[in-house]
Amino acid sequence: MSPAVSLNSLLLLSSVVSSASGLIVPKPLATDIDIPEGIGFTTTDWGNEGENKLYSSKERITKKQAKKGIFTAADCRVSFKTLMEGGVTFVETSPKYGKQLRGEEQSAEHLVAQGSATNWKKTPVLSTKYNPVPILQTSGSVVKSLEKSLERLETSYVDLYQVDFQKFHFLSSKSKIADGLATCIDRGLCTNVGVCNLGASALQSFASKLEDRGANLSTNQVEFSLVNRQALFDGTLEMCEDLGVLPLATNPLGNDLASGVYTASNPTGGRVGQAKYDFNTLGPLKPLHDALADIRKVARDRMWDEFYERKEANNRNYKLPPISGDFDREVTTTQISLMYVKAKGLVPLMEVRNKRDALELVGVVGYSLTEDEVKVLDKAAAKCGL
Image (cartoon, rainbow, N blue to C red; front, side):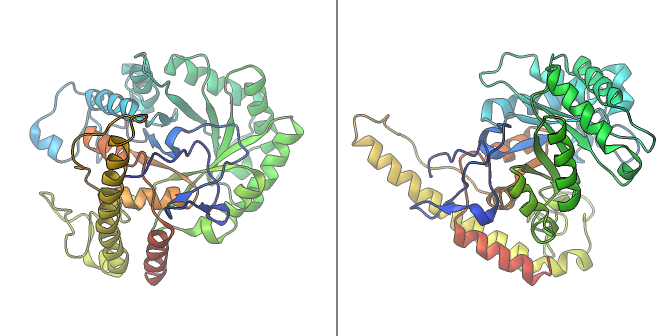
Protein backbone atom coordinates (compact mmCIF):
# COMPACT_ATOMS: atom_id res chain seq x y z
CA MET A 1 0.00 0.00 0.00
CA SER A 2 1.48 3.36 -0.95
CA PRO A 3 1.34 6.33 1.41
CA ALA A 4 -1.74 8.50 0.93
CA VAL A 5 -1.28 10.83 -2.01
CA SER A 6 -2.23 14.43 -1.21
CA LEU A 7 -4.83 15.48 -3.75
CA ASN A 8 -6.17 18.66 -2.20
CA SER A 9 -5.93 20.20 -5.64
CA LEU A 10 -5.38 18.61 -9.02
CA LEU A 11 -3.95 19.27 -12.44
CA LEU A 12 -4.74 17.71 -15.76
CA LEU A 13 -2.84 14.71 -17.06
CA SER A 14 -0.70 16.91 -19.26
CA SER A 15 0.79 18.42 -16.11
CA VAL A 16 1.09 15.20 -14.12
CA VAL A 17 4.51 14.13 -12.89
CA SER A 18 5.69 10.70 -11.90
CA SER A 19 6.93 9.69 -8.48
CA ALA A 20 9.75 7.23 -8.05
CA SER A 21 7.19 4.49 -7.53
CA GLY A 22 5.46 5.24 -10.83
CA LEU A 23 2.28 6.41 -9.13
CA ILE A 24 0.54 9.38 -10.67
CA VAL A 25 1.02 12.38 -8.38
CA PRO A 26 -0.71 15.56 -9.66
CA LYS A 27 1.02 18.89 -9.25
CA PRO A 28 -0.71 21.56 -7.14
CA LEU A 29 -3.29 23.65 -8.97
CA ALA A 30 -3.60 27.38 -8.43
CA THR A 31 -7.13 27.37 -7.01
CA ASP A 32 -8.53 28.25 -3.61
CA ILE A 33 -10.89 25.27 -3.27
CA ASP A 34 -9.58 22.51 -1.02
CA ILE A 35 -11.04 19.05 -1.63
CA PRO A 36 -9.43 16.49 0.71
CA GLU A 37 -8.17 13.33 -1.02
CA GLY A 38 -9.34 14.66 -4.40
CA ILE A 39 -12.67 12.82 -4.22
CA GLY A 40 -16.20 13.62 -3.16
CA PHE A 41 -19.78 12.38 -3.26
CA THR A 42 -23.02 13.69 -4.66
CA THR A 43 -26.48 13.60 -3.11
CA THR A 44 -28.32 13.57 -6.44
CA ASP A 45 -30.86 10.93 -5.38
CA TRP A 46 -31.31 11.99 -1.75
CA GLY A 47 -34.95 12.88 -1.17
CA ASN A 48 -35.76 12.13 -4.80
CA GLU A 49 -38.94 10.15 -4.28
CA GLY A 50 -41.46 9.11 -6.91
CA GLU A 51 -42.12 6.60 -9.66
CA ASN A 52 -38.96 4.78 -10.74
CA LYS A 53 -36.99 6.60 -8.01
CA LEU A 54 -34.90 4.87 -5.36
CA TYR A 55 -35.48 7.12 -2.35
CA SER A 56 -38.27 6.39 0.13
CA SER A 57 -39.49 8.90 2.71
CA LYS A 58 -40.72 6.06 4.92
CA GLU A 59 -38.86 5.31 8.13
CA ARG A 60 -38.62 1.61 7.32
CA ILE A 61 -38.54 -0.43 4.15
CA THR A 62 -38.69 -4.17 3.49
CA LYS A 63 -35.66 -6.35 2.80
CA LYS A 64 -37.00 -6.87 -0.70
CA GLN A 65 -37.03 -3.11 -1.29
CA ALA A 66 -33.52 -2.77 0.10
CA LYS A 67 -32.26 -5.44 -2.30
CA LYS A 68 -33.74 -3.42 -5.14
CA GLY A 69 -31.66 -0.43 -4.05
CA ILE A 70 -34.37 1.53 -2.25
CA PHE A 71 -32.88 3.72 0.50
CA THR A 72 -34.12 6.07 3.22
CA ALA A 73 -33.03 9.05 5.32
CA ALA A 74 -31.47 6.60 7.76
CA ASP A 75 -29.29 5.21 4.96
CA CYS A 76 -28.22 8.76 4.09
CA ARG A 77 -27.18 9.40 7.69
CA VAL A 78 -25.19 6.15 7.87
CA SER A 79 -23.56 6.91 4.52
CA PHE A 80 -22.63 10.41 5.66
CA LYS A 81 -21.05 9.07 8.85
CA THR A 82 -19.09 6.41 6.94
CA LEU A 83 -17.76 8.96 4.48
CA MET A 84 -16.79 11.56 7.08
CA GLU A 85 -14.96 8.98 9.19
CA GLY A 86 -13.28 7.59 6.07
CA GLY A 87 -11.88 10.94 4.95
CA VAL A 88 -14.31 11.70 2.10
CA THR A 89 -15.61 15.08 3.22
CA PHE A 90 -16.54 16.94 0.01
CA VAL A 91 -20.35 16.95 -0.36
CA GLU A 92 -22.07 18.04 -3.58
CA THR A 93 -25.75 18.93 -3.29
CA SER A 94 -28.35 21.20 -4.90
CA PRO A 95 -31.74 22.74 -4.10
CA LYS A 96 -33.10 20.65 -6.98
CA TYR A 97 -32.22 17.33 -5.36
CA GLY A 98 -35.31 16.00 -3.61
CA LYS A 99 -37.04 19.37 -3.59
CA GLN A 100 -40.45 17.68 -3.54
CA LEU A 101 -39.74 16.61 0.05
CA ARG A 102 -38.70 20.00 1.40
CA GLY A 103 -41.91 20.22 3.40
CA GLU A 104 -40.95 17.02 5.21
CA GLU A 105 -37.36 18.24 5.60
CA GLN A 106 -36.12 15.32 3.53
CA SER A 107 -34.70 17.20 0.57
CA ALA A 108 -31.02 16.57 -0.14
CA GLU A 109 -30.00 19.84 1.50
CA HIS A 110 -32.01 19.01 4.62
CA LEU A 111 -30.44 15.56 4.81
CA VAL A 112 -26.95 17.02 4.38
CA ALA A 113 -27.71 19.40 7.26
CA GLN A 114 -28.66 16.43 9.43
CA GLY A 115 -25.41 14.70 8.57
CA SER A 116 -23.31 17.82 9.13
CA ALA A 117 -24.81 18.44 12.59
CA THR A 118 -22.31 16.04 14.19
CA ASN A 119 -18.99 17.50 15.32
CA TRP A 120 -16.84 15.52 12.89
CA LYS A 121 -13.06 15.34 13.23
CA LYS A 122 -12.82 16.82 9.73
CA THR A 123 -15.36 19.48 8.82
CA PRO A 124 -17.56 18.63 5.79
CA VAL A 125 -16.73 20.67 2.69
CA LEU A 126 -20.13 21.75 1.36
CA SER A 127 -21.12 22.65 -2.17
CA THR A 128 -24.55 23.64 -3.44
CA LYS A 129 -25.87 25.13 -6.68
CA TYR A 130 -27.82 27.87 -8.34
CA ASN A 131 -30.14 26.63 -11.09
CA PRO A 132 -30.95 29.35 -13.64
CA VAL A 133 -34.41 29.22 -15.20
CA PRO A 134 -35.07 30.24 -18.83
CA ILE A 135 -36.14 33.76 -17.91
CA LEU A 136 -34.28 36.98 -17.20
CA GLN A 137 -31.94 36.51 -14.23
CA THR A 138 -30.88 39.12 -11.71
CA SER A 139 -27.88 39.15 -9.41
CA GLY A 140 -30.35 39.23 -6.54
CA SER A 141 -31.92 35.91 -7.56
CA VAL A 142 -28.48 34.27 -7.33
CA VAL A 143 -27.96 35.61 -3.82
CA LYS A 144 -31.50 34.79 -2.67
CA SER A 145 -31.24 31.20 -3.86
CA LEU A 146 -28.05 30.69 -1.84
CA GLU A 147 -29.60 32.27 1.24
CA LYS A 148 -32.47 29.78 1.06
CA SER A 149 -30.02 26.90 0.58
CA LEU A 150 -28.06 28.03 3.63
CA GLU A 151 -31.26 27.93 5.68
CA ARG A 152 -31.90 24.33 4.63
CA LEU A 153 -28.24 23.39 5.15
CA GLU A 154 -28.29 25.10 8.55
CA THR A 155 -25.00 26.86 7.94
CA SER A 156 -23.85 30.44 7.46
CA TYR A 157 -21.81 29.72 4.33
CA VAL A 158 -20.77 26.99 1.89
CA ASP A 159 -17.31 26.26 0.59
CA LEU A 160 -18.46 26.20 -3.03
CA TYR A 161 -21.45 27.72 -4.84
CA GLN A 162 -21.87 26.56 -8.43
CA VAL A 163 -24.09 27.71 -11.28
CA ASP A 164 -25.68 24.72 -12.99
CA PHE A 165 -25.81 25.89 -16.60
CA GLN A 166 -28.15 23.70 -18.65
CA LYS A 167 -29.52 23.97 -22.19
CA PHE A 168 -31.49 27.13 -21.38
CA HIS A 169 -28.58 29.04 -19.90
CA PHE A 170 -28.20 31.15 -23.04
CA LEU A 171 -31.46 32.90 -22.15
CA SER A 172 -30.00 34.03 -18.85
CA SER A 173 -27.77 37.03 -18.35
CA LYS A 174 -24.36 35.63 -17.53
CA SER A 175 -23.08 39.03 -16.48
CA LYS A 176 -25.80 39.33 -13.85
CA ILE A 177 -25.20 35.78 -12.67
CA ALA A 178 -21.47 36.53 -12.36
CA ASP A 179 -22.32 39.68 -10.40
CA GLY A 180 -24.55 37.63 -8.09
CA LEU A 181 -21.80 35.09 -7.44
CA ALA A 182 -19.32 37.84 -6.65
CA THR A 183 -21.83 39.38 -4.25
CA CYS A 184 -22.17 36.03 -2.48
CA ILE A 185 -18.40 35.97 -1.95
CA ASP A 186 -18.36 39.59 -0.80
CA ARG A 187 -21.08 38.88 1.75
CA GLY A 188 -19.33 35.76 3.05
CA LEU A 189 -22.12 33.42 1.92
CA CYS A 190 -19.58 31.24 0.08
CA THR A 191 -15.82 31.07 -0.18
CA ASN A 192 -15.55 29.78 -3.77
CA VAL A 193 -17.72 29.85 -6.88
CA GLY A 194 -17.90 27.52 -9.83
CA VAL A 195 -19.94 26.45 -12.85
CA CYS A 196 -21.34 23.25 -14.29
CA ASN A 197 -21.47 22.02 -17.88
CA LEU A 198 -19.45 24.77 -19.59
CA GLY A 199 -17.22 23.98 -22.54
CA ALA A 200 -13.91 25.68 -23.28
CA SER A 201 -15.07 28.95 -24.87
CA ALA A 202 -18.04 29.46 -22.55
CA LEU A 203 -15.82 28.72 -19.55
CA GLN A 204 -13.26 31.31 -20.62
CA SER A 205 -15.98 33.89 -21.22
CA PHE A 206 -17.63 33.38 -17.84
CA ALA A 207 -14.30 33.39 -15.99
CA SER A 208 -13.60 36.76 -17.61
CA LYS A 209 -16.95 38.14 -16.44
CA LEU A 210 -16.16 37.05 -12.89
CA GLU A 211 -12.72 38.63 -13.06
CA ASP A 212 -14.31 41.91 -14.12
CA ARG A 213 -16.27 41.72 -10.88
CA GLY A 214 -13.13 40.94 -8.87
CA ALA A 215 -13.82 37.24 -8.29
CA ASN A 216 -12.09 34.05 -9.40
CA LEU A 217 -13.68 30.94 -10.89
CA SER A 218 -12.67 27.86 -8.87
CA THR A 219 -14.42 24.86 -10.47
CA ASN A 220 -16.14 23.49 -13.55
CA GLN A 221 -18.27 20.40 -13.03
CA VAL A 222 -18.55 18.29 -16.19
CA GLU A 223 -19.56 14.75 -17.02
CA PHE A 224 -16.53 12.48 -17.29
CA SER A 225 -15.87 8.75 -17.02
CA LEU A 226 -14.12 5.95 -18.85
CA VAL A 227 -17.14 5.74 -21.16
CA ASN A 228 -17.41 9.51 -21.64
CA ARG A 229 -14.04 11.13 -22.18
CA GLN A 230 -15.24 13.99 -24.37
CA ALA A 231 -13.86 16.67 -22.05
CA LEU A 232 -10.37 15.31 -22.75
CA PHE A 233 -10.67 15.99 -26.46
CA ASP A 234 -12.92 19.04 -26.85
CA GLY A 235 -10.64 21.49 -25.08
CA THR A 236 -12.65 21.69 -21.84
CA LEU A 237 -9.98 20.21 -19.54
CA GLU A 238 -7.24 22.10 -21.32
CA MET A 239 -9.10 25.37 -20.68
CA CYS A 240 -9.57 24.40 -17.03
CA GLU A 241 -5.81 24.03 -16.76
CA ASP A 242 -5.15 27.35 -18.49
CA LEU A 243 -7.55 29.17 -16.16
CA GLY A 244 -6.48 27.37 -12.98
CA VAL A 245 -9.98 25.92 -12.62
CA LEU A 246 -10.45 22.58 -10.86
CA PRO A 247 -12.59 20.14 -12.90
CA LEU A 248 -15.15 18.06 -11.01
CA ALA A 249 -16.47 14.87 -12.61
CA THR A 250 -20.19 14.21 -12.63
CA ASN A 251 -21.25 10.60 -13.26
CA PRO A 252 -17.68 9.23 -12.98
CA LEU A 253 -18.96 5.65 -13.36
CA GLY A 254 -20.93 6.38 -16.51
CA ASN A 255 -24.25 5.07 -15.17
CA ASP A 256 -22.32 1.95 -14.08
CA LEU A 257 -21.14 1.19 -17.61
CA ALA A 258 -17.63 2.20 -16.49
CA SER A 259 -17.79 0.40 -13.15
CA GLY A 260 -16.93 -3.05 -14.50
CA VAL A 261 -19.83 -4.45 -12.47
CA TYR A 262 -22.14 -4.96 -15.44
CA THR A 263 -20.46 -6.81 -18.28
CA ALA A 264 -21.50 -8.81 -21.32
CA SER A 265 -20.89 -12.01 -19.37
CA ASN A 266 -22.53 -10.67 -16.20
CA PRO A 267 -25.34 -8.26 -17.23
CA THR A 268 -27.05 -8.44 -13.81
CA GLY A 269 -23.88 -7.49 -11.94
CA GLY A 270 -24.21 -10.67 -9.89
CA ARG A 271 -27.41 -9.39 -8.32
CA VAL A 272 -30.86 -10.87 -8.26
CA GLY A 273 -33.18 -9.45 -10.88
CA GLN A 274 -33.33 -8.45 -14.50
CA ALA A 275 -30.19 -7.46 -16.43
CA LYS A 276 -29.51 -3.74 -16.18
CA TYR A 277 -28.14 -3.53 -19.74
CA ASP A 278 -28.51 -5.72 -22.82
CA PHE A 279 -25.72 -7.31 -24.82
CA ASN A 280 -25.91 -4.63 -27.53
CA THR A 281 -24.82 -2.10 -24.93
CA LEU A 282 -22.33 -4.20 -22.97
CA GLY A 283 -20.78 -6.21 -25.83
CA PRO A 284 -18.87 -3.30 -27.41
CA LEU A 285 -17.42 -2.42 -24.00
CA LYS A 286 -15.78 -5.82 -23.46
CA PRO A 287 -12.19 -4.56 -24.07
CA LEU A 288 -12.69 -1.90 -21.41
CA HIS A 289 -14.29 -4.24 -18.89
CA ASP A 290 -11.54 -6.82 -19.43
CA ALA A 291 -8.90 -4.13 -18.88
CA LEU A 292 -10.59 -3.01 -15.64
CA ALA A 293 -10.59 -6.59 -14.38
CA ASP A 294 -6.91 -7.03 -15.26
CA ILE A 295 -5.85 -3.73 -13.67
CA ARG A 296 -7.80 -4.60 -10.53
CA LYS A 297 -5.67 -7.72 -10.06
CA VAL A 298 -2.41 -5.94 -10.88
CA ALA A 299 -3.19 -3.02 -8.58
CA ARG A 300 -4.13 -5.28 -5.70
CA ASP A 301 -0.88 -7.26 -6.02
CA ARG A 302 1.08 -4.00 -6.14
CA MET A 303 -0.68 -2.63 -3.07
CA TRP A 304 -0.07 -5.92 -1.27
CA ASP A 305 3.68 -5.73 -1.96
CA GLU A 306 3.87 -2.05 -1.02
CA PHE A 307 2.06 -2.69 2.26
CA TYR A 308 4.51 -5.37 3.34
CA GLU A 309 7.50 -3.31 2.26
CA ARG A 310 6.24 -0.41 4.37
CA LYS A 311 5.40 -2.74 7.25
CA GLU A 312 8.90 -4.20 7.28
CA ALA A 313 10.54 -0.76 7.07
CA ASN A 314 8.40 0.67 9.87
CA ASN A 315 8.83 -2.29 12.17
CA ARG A 316 12.62 -2.00 12.10
CA ASN A 317 12.66 1.80 12.38
CA TYR A 318 11.93 2.84 15.96
CA LYS A 319 11.12 6.41 14.81
CA LEU A 320 8.12 5.21 12.83
CA PRO A 321 4.97 3.63 14.28
CA PRO A 322 5.11 -0.17 13.92
CA ILE A 323 2.60 -1.81 11.58
CA SER A 324 0.89 -5.05 12.53
CA GLY A 325 -1.68 -7.21 10.81
CA ASP A 326 -2.03 -8.45 7.24
CA PHE A 327 -3.03 -6.70 4.06
CA ASP A 328 -6.70 -7.57 3.61
CA ARG A 329 -7.66 -4.67 1.36
CA GLU A 330 -9.90 -5.68 -1.53
CA VAL A 331 -9.80 -3.65 -4.72
CA THR A 332 -12.82 -3.41 -7.02
CA THR A 333 -13.20 -2.44 -10.65
CA THR A 334 -15.41 0.43 -9.50
CA GLN A 335 -12.53 1.84 -7.46
CA ILE A 336 -10.13 1.41 -10.38
CA SER A 337 -12.52 3.39 -12.57
CA LEU A 338 -12.68 6.19 -9.99
CA MET A 339 -8.88 6.21 -9.68
CA TYR A 340 -8.70 6.65 -13.45
CA VAL A 341 -10.83 9.79 -13.24
CA LYS A 342 -8.51 11.11 -10.50
CA ALA A 343 -5.48 10.31 -12.64
CA LYS A 344 -6.92 12.46 -15.42
CA GLY A 345 -6.99 15.41 -13.06
CA LEU A 346 -10.67 15.51 -12.11
CA VAL A 347 -12.40 15.11 -8.76
CA PRO A 348 -14.85 12.19 -9.11
CA LEU A 349 -18.23 12.81 -7.46
CA MET A 350 -19.77 9.40 -6.92
CA GLU A 351 -23.46 8.91 -6.18
CA VAL A 352 -23.85 7.42 -2.70
CA ARG A 353 -27.12 5.93 -1.46
CA ASN A 354 -26.13 3.52 1.28
CA LYS A 355 -23.24 2.31 3.43
CA ARG A 356 -22.09 -0.13 0.75
CA ASP A 357 -21.65 2.75 -1.72
CA ALA A 358 -19.91 4.82 0.95
CA LEU A 359 -17.41 2.06 1.75
CA GLU A 360 -16.69 1.65 -1.96
CA LEU A 361 -15.76 5.32 -2.20
CA VAL A 362 -13.79 5.39 1.05
CA GLY A 363 -11.73 2.52 -0.38
CA VAL A 364 -10.25 4.94 -2.94
CA VAL A 365 -8.68 7.15 -0.27
CA GLY A 366 -4.90 6.96 -0.37
CA TYR A 367 -4.66 4.95 -3.59
CA SER A 368 -3.54 5.87 -7.10
CA LEU A 369 -2.91 4.14 -10.39
CA THR A 370 0.48 4.03 -12.07
CA GLU A 371 1.10 5.67 -15.43
CA ASP A 372 1.23 2.26 -17.10
CA GLU A 373 -2.10 1.25 -15.59
CA VAL A 374 -3.71 4.45 -16.86
CA LYS A 375 -2.27 3.85 -20.33
CA VAL A 376 -3.82 0.37 -20.42
CA LEU A 377 -7.23 1.85 -19.63
CA ASP A 378 -6.71 4.65 -22.18
CA LYS A 379 -6.00 2.09 -24.91
CA ALA A 380 -8.97 -0.05 -23.91
CA ALA A 381 -11.33 2.94 -23.97
CA ALA A 382 -10.00 4.00 -27.35
CA LYS A 383 -10.50 0.47 -28.65
CA CYS A 384 -14.15 0.81 -27.67
CA GLY A 385 -14.35 4.08 -29.59
CA LEU A 386 -14.51 6.13 -26.38
